[in-house]
Length: 424
Figure 1 (cartoon, helix red, strand yellow):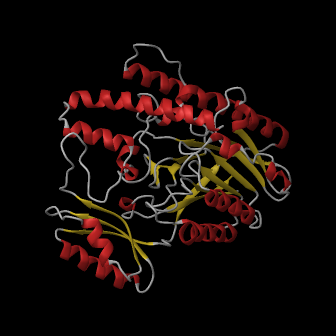
Figure 2 (tube, helix red, strand yellow):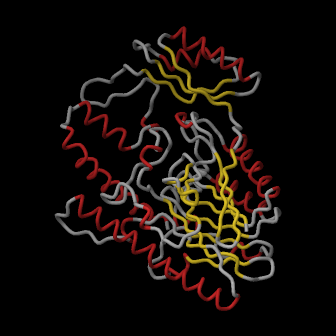
Figure 3 (spheres, one colour):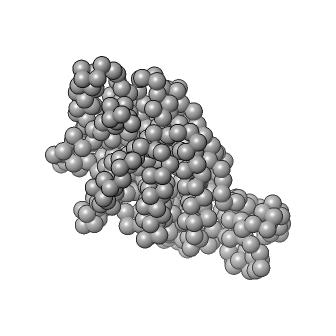
């Protein structure tokens, strides 16, 4: 059996007002469908964050459903999708049952945790002859409310310990159900099948792979910054993870992987490649290789210390684009340049270049507000970005900062959960 592992599509993502659905996501999908055909993929697994927001634009939803329609014609037999922290559980689950009309492919959509129906997270996939070929623990992003009860006066360490226990307990329970299925399959069919486990979370060590501009909202569960590998079932033959936008294997375990996002979500992701993971099983043994995703959008970080340097770099980038549209972000690392955004915009007149943001590293708004770059808007900043800048401006003692961050994160989570419940 062949599995193609991907994650973090973030459909609907755009740079400010810059559209990126058809020319970029559409091209990646066409490429991915060709890989699925040529590699004879049996299972496509999307490990969370299908959409960029819980209420994605209609075009993003249409793009996803059109992709599934085309996927049914590739020979791929199975699609498993789990929800991520950016996804709405209801949005992912909504078409469940609709895809039953496809007799050549079965579709499993697990948008979120249902504590009363953990069996839903255990999926048995069958081959062309109707015999089981794998078992999937399709564990989605797990909201904090499913993992611990809130107690007044708890320390961050106590919260983290409860979160760790709750997360491990969830994987243990789902893993036990999966092992029951594997035992049944061995008794009835006389063969061992691989166990595939999913997750959408930070794991220990993943902080060095996070980027400041990658669109990952840094929301650890409670005080739990990241999970250890001990939360996952030991018997897992492949662990397909999402949430980190850079693809890599964890602690040299080739079968435990983040696939990374399929396109650069931020300009600081241009430094590393994007890929999907192809896992080929022989019984329970697995061989994994990465397939690099081509770049379908020309993007570049433009830096300079003067406006002349920046405009000269734009001319060079325009020549590199060779008549194609190029997308860029400008950072001035020198002395403050007044009206940087306006000067760049005027210079683009008649050029096939699109500015996705400008910043003056040495600019600052008036006292009482946050440090900000010219042309930068609050839409480009996360809540934590604003909070960190405010603490820096007010010179909050370093020892207090993490406690204040944790309080903010708890408030954000409560707001997110309220919005999720209203929208589902």
